[in-house]
Structures are given as C-alpha cells and as structure tokens.
Length: 483
Image 1 (spheres, rainbow, N blue to C red):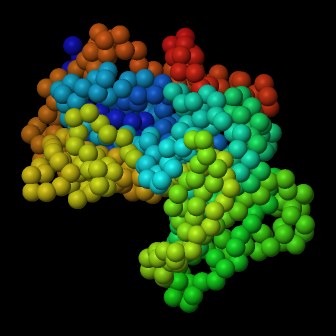
Image 2 (cartoon, rainbow, N blue to C red):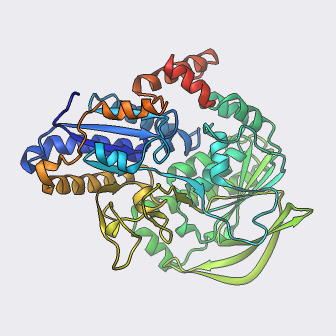
C-alpha cells in the first residue's frame, strides 16, 4: 500500500467547470496551502462518464465556433499535469458511489453540467417535428450516445429562443455543408445530413425585444457570415424608446449586442436592396427571419405532424418586463426547435433544487446541502458543486472560471478547519480507486488514452485537409484509447 499525505480531491465531470476547478484548486493550494495549514500538495482525480474529456466544449457548442479550439487546447494543457488524473468512461452513481468516493477523497466536487432540455410546455409540443435543442446539438456534435441520423426534410423551420444555443441551432440549420466541413471537425454523418437539409426558410422567435436578447456578439457575427443566406428583420422591432436605450447602455455586453444587432439591421436592408443576396452579395437561396417581441403560443399540427406555429406579438419595457398584446400570427413550418434552456444533470444521492434547476447548495456558495431550501437544509460536509451544477444553466464558459475560484476558496477554507489539515478520507492509498474500478471490470480512459483518440482524429482530418475529424462511436474511442 502506497499511502500518501497529499490532499485528495475527486471532481465529477471533465468539462470546462471540472477542469478549471482542478487547475484553480492546485494553484490556490500552492499559494495559500502553507498559511492554511494544508501543505501545497494535492492529487485530483477527475471522473468523466463519457470516453473523452471536455464536456460542453466538445459536445455542447456548435462546431463552427473558432474560439472553441483555443478553449479545448487550454483545457488539454491543464489536464497534462502530473497532479491531475483523468478517469474517463467512469460514471458516477453506476461505476462508483458517493460513499466509495468519500472513503477515498477529502472532498468531492460536482461539475456535471447539463444534458437535457427544459420542456417546451406549449400545446402541440408533442407533435412529430418538434425537437429540443439538446438532442439536435448532440447529433451535430457527434455525442457518443446521440442520434446518428437527423430528419432534415422540413423546408420551413422555426427556432424558439433568445440565447446562444438558439443561435447555434438556427445557424447549423442554415449552413452550407461544404463550407461547414472545410472549417470544422464534423463527422461524415453530420456532413451528409446537412448536405441533404431541405430547409429554405427559417424563423427565429425571440419573446422579448432587441435590448433583452441574450446573444453574444460573437454569435451575431457568425450569423452575419452565412453563405447563401439572406437575413430578414422587422424594422419595427428596432424602434427602441429612450429608456430602453439608456438601460441597455448601462451594461457593456448588452450595449455591444444591441450595437451589433443594429449593424445586422443595416446589413439586412442592404441584402434586400441588392436583390435578396447573402453577405457577400451573392444570390441567396435561403431566408433567415429574425422576429423580436414574438412569443410562440402553440404548435399547430395535422395528422400528428407540425404544420405551423402560432405566435403572439409582445411588447417589452425598459426593465425587461414582457406584455402580451393579443395580436397573433401563424407561420407555416414543418419543424420546430426549442432552445429555451437546459436542465442541469442530477447526481445520485445529491439533493436537487427543481425550482432553480441545479444541485442543492447553500446560498449559491457551492456547498452542497441536504435539501433545496428551508430550515431543514443542512450543509453536507466535503461535498461541493461548481458551474451549471451549482448555478443552473446560465452564463458562458468564462463565467465558470469565476465560479471555480469562489468554490475553491470555500473548499480550502473548510479543509483548513477540518481535522488533520483536511486529510479526512480513511483510505489514503492513491491506487485504491484503480483496484475498486478494476474489480468491477471498469476500464478508465486516462489522459494518455485521450491523446491516442486525439491523434487519430487529427490524422483522419489531415487526410481531408482538415485539422481534426471527430470520432463518434464510443466503442471505437475505447479501442483507440486502450490500444
């Protein structure tokens, strides 16, 4: 038995939240460990249920986001750290339990992200042709257990949502397959699917006004540069009152978004004036309508299939309050995609806050509690949450870093108060977890295994003049990683 005296931390989820937290924990321990009586050494074991790391960066963001490559590369550098041990293909609650982790680790941090859609909740939501964004994203991102084919036979489609996921979904539905393949790592099945996509008209419905949308400027700029696509807006949506303009100006990101939307308004006018062209002045064969102050109220069907969407006009005040007008319009569509938010994953044995859609934690400080709220809610010692698991499905990848720093600070504070300088796990043998998993026939994929998958993806991409080409079959990933 090779017992060690380093702190031992288990992190569940190897997406941005888990990787950032691991990195920040080691850095902060290095800075503050001696002063807190914890020493400066820790071993972090990072558990991921998928065969490969990076979570949202690999499987939740559209493949044509250029910044994603930089984020993935930064995450990979973090994982290439002798104090961080990657255990992919190990599912919490199935391959290893909470009690087994608490026996072997001084603290357990949940960074489990989100994989499910919030339900649409409109009449007609169960019609054939209504899709949640999460499943569509899984398809075009090659999620290991996602769909391999997607029905793209609707000529007119609607996308519901005022955030970045809605923008991603709409953009991929309007994408030129050859252009997408040339610039991204999409696998062959996604290329073939998008090549056969029949969509010619897309309606994006945003319930609130121009100043209340939640788009990033980057998303808007990517929408502007779609080959063969004409952007069409409603002039009235951009008639903002002085109070709304003043309110939008108070927040830098909102101001930048509104400025970009006004640039899109001008662009849309130019496209129309030039004879229905795309951004380069070429004839457009697809039309992308952007509707603000438009709240879908019902999906209309015939023979169990989507045939139209009914939308109510709204007005939005400067403070973001939406009012319905009682004016309705119907748009013929054969498919409806809703991107109205994700529901972060639950974790076996951990209380869940259904109202706020995240793991129950005390006042948002990341310390997991026995129940969502109320007087009976007690802090569970040694258990923490970060990222969407802590705060619900809000904020960009960057927000995860500030989250991680807060949680790590709380973890270090608690560990410093614990007996024996935070070293409270009974089993301190670092190989104990390996023996436990081996006894169950679980074969984790480590960082070296991931590097083999990555090398294969790069080699396959190089054959087609691309940087990368995703492997999507989990069995192939395992075979490559364990070779």
